[in-house]
Length: 150
Image (cartoon, rainbow, N blue to C red; front, side, top):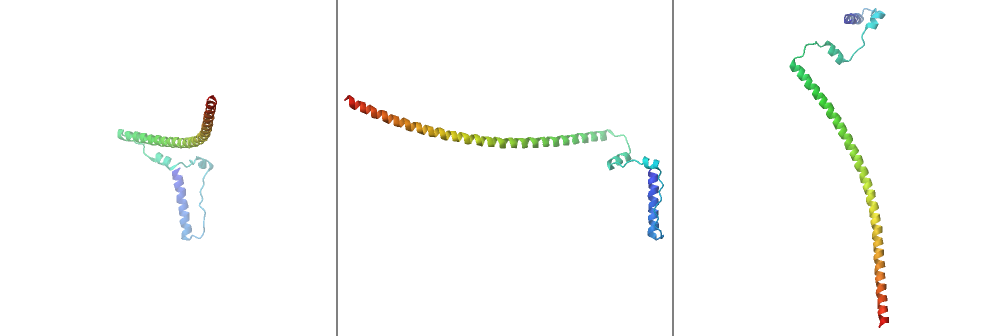
């Protein structure tokens, strides 16, 4: 398969050289590909997959196996740390939102309590005034009664 592709590439290169040298005619390369050959061409894969196929499969030494195991553990640890960081960020964001809501509710509660305290204070002042007036009236009545009794 690669030999066929290599031959086709060489044929195209030769044709381009003839055109550059001035053979006069620009001829298109003739490539005869049957339908069966076209269907048998594998689909392109990723460079990493191609590299993995080309690598020789040598048995791993115990040291290499430990290295790969350690690398896998480190990669797993990094992934876990990233996930934990994202979870922490989400938790921090939720806590910030809850704190903001709590502050708003607290401010509203404080404002209501201040209003109630003002009303109670006013009521207290009114009651003190009324008590003071009532005492004065009672003292006056006592004096009046005392004067009548004499």
